[in-house]
Length: 253
Image (cartoon, rainbow, N blue to C red):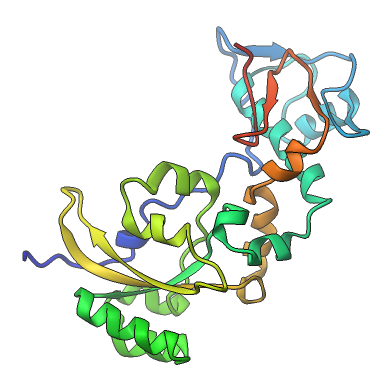
């Protein structure tokens, strides 16, 4: 087997932030797919809570959009999505939903130990399953030096990360099944040709183990589809409609 240099990019290259998080709005004028803001009825409603035109204009002003600026609809929909998710999350026990596991929350925050072969990965897995401390197993086995600074912690996988990469990236597919009840797993790392070049040992991080910044990010990416299905959500048709399956505001038609 050809030897590849293992870097943090092997694990992190597929990780991206979900579009449901706050996005800066471009104020560049474009020919199509735009809207001009003016006083009218509510932009969106979740249950009995409304995002009024004045509130939305104030948010846009904070992002540099004022008056009759014409802005692309996609980032506007992303901002409306962020507001809707914020209302839905307010009624969710985020910690409990996250700790129910990635299949429930749609989010997987894991730590990783990169090793050269499956035999080493399986041995490390056995140690973790036997109660060994993750940092000790990481220090004894990890060959990816760029993971050392975080003791193996890698950025959380959002629902978008999982949907877009699970089919082609084994460790993402495995992480998407993990929970406190199934906290450890192994998966191969593949190069761009699909050839195995290393293995990774994954350890699910509970809510209490997350960094403060990760906890803050959860509200923007955690799966709110169950809450959305039970809530009356309305979006002004000029911007689109709320799709409960994707948890985002999408265009009509």
